[in-house]
Picture 1 (tube, helix red, strand yellow):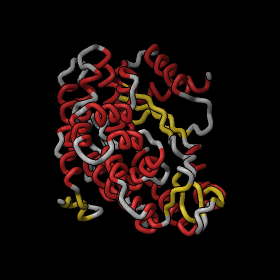
Picture 2 (spheres, rainbow, N blue to C red; picture 1 turned 180 degrees about the horizontal axis):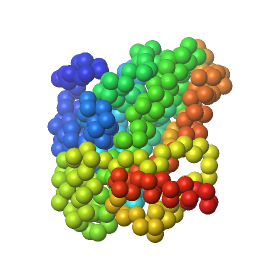
Picture 3 (cartoon, one colour; picture 1 turned 30 degrees about the vertical axis):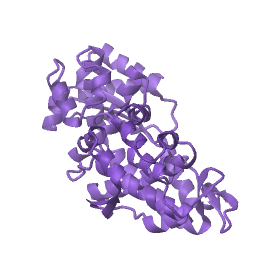
Picture 4 (cartoon, rainbow, N blue to C red; picture 1 turned 90 degrees about the vertical axis):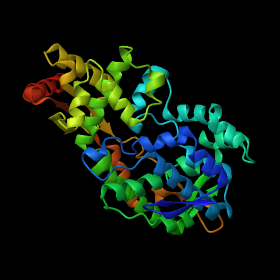
Length: 378
């Protein structure tokens, strides 16, 4: 048994099996995949990695398992530990590349790593069931305690991200939240006494999305990186299969050598595009197909492809609800039926849809005018 020192949880106990997995190259790679992508360009201390997040998620999963079931579920703990093993460089920023060229999400890539890599051999040589780990990893059964609305994954990234960014705008009473969790009819739930703890979680989530995850500068840099990576893969300079296995620094170096590397050079100098248009369009019928048409409109009017980015910033998890149970684990409703705070925050996030167009300073005014023309013509 060994201990890992963590900024949030202090000492985290690691079993012999977990230590073997941690030492595996597939897991060690997560040290070099940033948790928050390019957040450190805005929040300098946001340098956390998927490695520490994965260890933290494993620790929280163990705590939840002991609280809900009275004992640790080793397969569930490994699911928490390995839930992000498939992330590509800069985490979610590379997700569109995997989906576009491989037809896979980071969960799909992670499933393949667990099933087919040396990690599979490590687990198979132990008393732990590889099939059960894969079942949980797929989000089935107890796996929802990792991936669900109040799952260990979300609890950890909010705790670590708020600590690392210094954005302490909400407080998650983690120990109380964990002790008030339940598991009923194959679904995660929370006791009625834990409603206020769930509310504190969703308050923190709201503030983190508003302050960090949806920050305009971070969104601009992410889009610049994605545009550079997409061009390199589409041109055959990098194979998508190789790109998704890279570490952050490998991806930046490889892309910086590409003929269209100006976007990466600008990121490295933090000479990022500036907002030309940034507006909350709310419930307007403006989707990705409209965004593609906008891009065509800009380029047909003389805006060079590598001189701008466009992005719809929205929040996809605003409707996450959770079962409320009484002392005898009987269902008494859902959080949305008991919490005005949850409903209000969900509504605020659900209705947010920001159209962001940023560019080189030489095109800002022209782009602002063109975007307004396009929107008014639709």
